[in-house]
Amino acid sequence: MDALSIVEDEVRELVRRRGLDPGKQPVLIRSLIDDVLRDYDERALLGAVPSIGPLDEARRQVYDNVAGFGPLQPLLDDPTVEELWINSPHQIFCARGGQSELTHIRLESAEVAALVERMLKSSGRRLDLSQPFVDCQLPDGSRLHVVIPDITHEHWAVNIRKFIARANKLEDLVELGSLSEDAAAFLGWSIGAGLNVVVTGPTQAGKTTMLNCLASSIGSRERIITIEEIFELNLALRDVVSMQTRLPNLEGTGEITMRRLVKEALRMRPDRIIVGEVREAESLDMLIALNSGIAGLCTLHANSARDAITKICTLPLLAGPNITSDFTVRTVAACIDLVVHCTRDPNGKRYVQEILSVRGRVEDGQFETSTLFDYTDGELSQAPGADWSHDKFALAGINVAQLLMERS
Image (cartoon, rainbow, N blue to C red; front, side, top):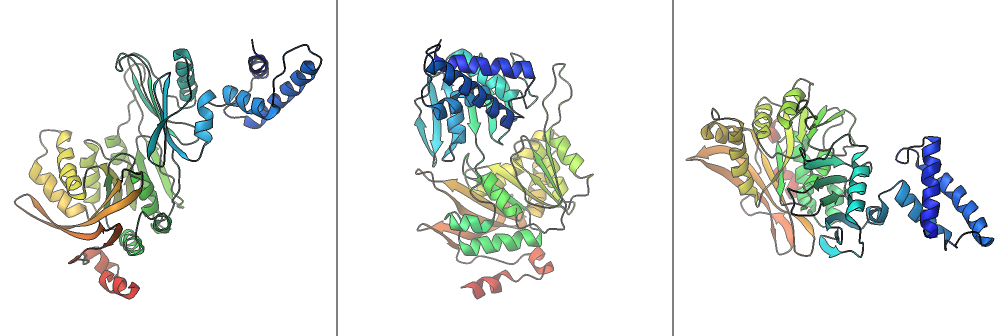
């Protein structure tokens, strides 16, 4: 047994004897590791045990193995790493700046299972043959998704998406080059006037970050209810209630779905509801809520702003055979005001590609829309012929065309 393993075993035994929780008592664990290392180093000087090498490196490795997530912890601590995933114990990848790379980390199958078990410990969620998928939040806010055999072919598939908040306000997105100043100002006015906004784009295009930044423009006196599968939003607002879904228990009962949460949110006096991601039939309940006069925001996977409109008209049909396409089309036209489409280029840069206005009129199933901002020649700029008028702007006393003209 090498020196590091000896120290680690001593620390684990002391943690067990003293009843410490590594996840909740990091200061005590670090102090304990320092004591054990100091004692071990003294024994090593006498030749009783092998030398452990640089103490700082040993201290970090022991802490990562005891209180962290072992060899993965350096990647989780690295602010440049956005995501990491395990395809097999010998294939561990990470993403930096939108670009994936194969890491040097190699694990054993038992180590992968042990790490996942440790990650799930604080979430209360389970993973077994009857429930081969799991989606939960790690203590640092990262999102964990795991799939096990025989759903996967041979190895456990583990994905950890870190939530790196590089932007908290629309102005931050301007500084990052993801949004133009005029578009940021327009979106701020839109949120202030209570327009309903759908943020769309592919995976890892920055939809959740955009949703957080849009929410920063919500008035301080508004009551916000957020609905998510896993807590990801981090709103710096005064009056916020956050809710997330729940999986069924071992008996197959106790499940709380997105649909249920949207319905519950309506009983909580919301001024605005935010649905983290619309995937299925909960889109119907969200549209009904928006049609009752409550302002809302949500995200949606789509290839373009216009594809998003088609998709959000189709998803409510999953709620049951009594929901008709004519109903959903007219409801979407009445409820959705703006679509903000985000994208990511091959180099990993994230930016807003288009801001589309839904005008509220439908003829032969076709929506009347107006492109307000479009990404051309490397810049998000005002689209020719953009129609800035909207009833909600008029009620709020906001003349967008005039304000944009004054900015130029």
